[in-house]
Length: 131
Image (cartoon, rainbow, N blue to C red; front, side, top):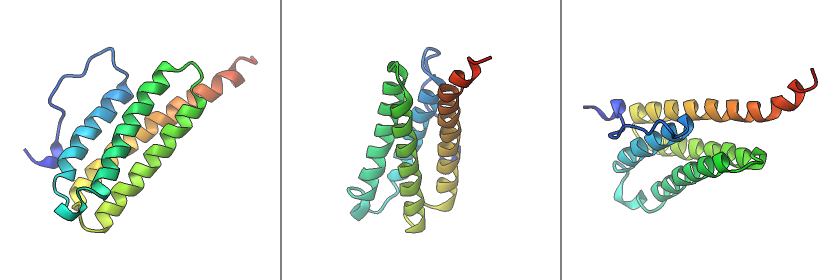
């Protein structure tokens, strides 16, 4: 099986948020892609990317548990932008081939659309209550 068609090995729990399932699948793919980095970069940019992926998962879990989600959602959005920039830089430096970058960027875009919808759902109910 090619790495571009990577699928998570476990069946996701139906009680998990869909965004959490997507982030976990992205982390699994990311770890496989990071193994291809040169040895000199495994503890530098690779470690930073890994840290951002885990921070993204942590923020999704925290955001799901909090009653007031606005600031946590903004942190989540900022962390996703940081991860996108790190992955893009890895591709530009030649440590990530284009196909892996393309697939990883697609996963990140999907997560970004979900975060955007979550933010929109948190800001719109106040306007919708005025009817």
